[in-house]
Image (cartoon, rainbow, N blue to C red; front, side, top):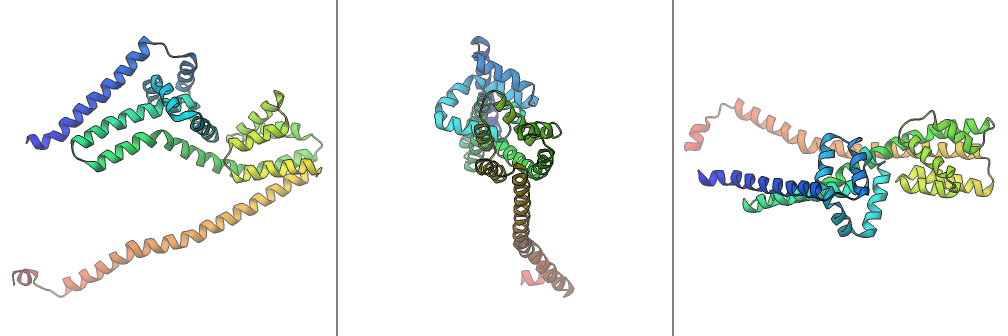
Length: 300
C-alpha cells in the first residue's frame, strides 16, 4: 500500500516545493520593489491579458532580468522581433515573456523532480519540454494566425487603395483614408507605419520596418514592389493593382498545392485506419458465422 501511495506523496512534496519557490518569489517582490520598466510591464499586461496570464507574470517577473541575461542580447532581439510579428498578443512584451518563461521553467523543473523520484522518464521529459517551450507556444500560434489574417486582407486593401489614389489623393493621404475603414492586424500595422512617418521617419525606412514586423511573403512582396515602383517612377495605382493581382495568383497556387497535399493524406488515413478495420470486420464475420467452438479448440 505504501508503494502505491509513494508517487502521490512525491507529487505532493514536489507541489509544496514549487509553491514554496513561488511564494519566495512573491515575498521577494513584496520586499524588493521591481524596476520601473518591469512594474510598467506588469501594469499594462494585467489590463490586456487573462487573469491566469497576469498571475503567471506576477510570479515570474522578479526572475525576468535573470532570464534575459541568460538569453543574451542576440536572442533577446530575435525574440523581441518575434513578439512584434505576433502583434504583441495580450500586450506581451519581452519582459513579460521572460517572466512567463521563468515561471513555467520553475514549474517544469519541480515536476521533473517528481518524475525522477517516481522513476518515470517519460513524465520527466514531458514536463521539462513544457517548462522550456510553454512561453513560446502562444507566440507561434499568434504569428500564424496574424499572418493568415494579413495575407487575406492585403489584396482587397490594395484594390481599395488603388481606387483612392486614382481619385486624386496622394499615397500618404490615401493610406490614412483607407486605414480608417479597416480593422485588425493589418490596419494596426498601417497606423504604426503612418505614425512613424509623422515622427520624421522616411517612407522607405517606415516600410522596411513594416516588412521586419511581419513574417509574410505577401507583405515583403508589397513593400518591395512599392519601393521599386517609386524608384522607377511607375504610376502608384497601376503598381498597387499589379501587386494585388500577383497576390491573388499566389493564393490560388498555394490553395492548389494544399489541395494536392490533401489527397495523399486522405489516402494514407484510409489505408491506415479504414482498411484494417474493414478486414477485422470481415474476418470476425466469417469466424462468428462458422459456429466454431473456440473452447474446444483452445482446450485441445
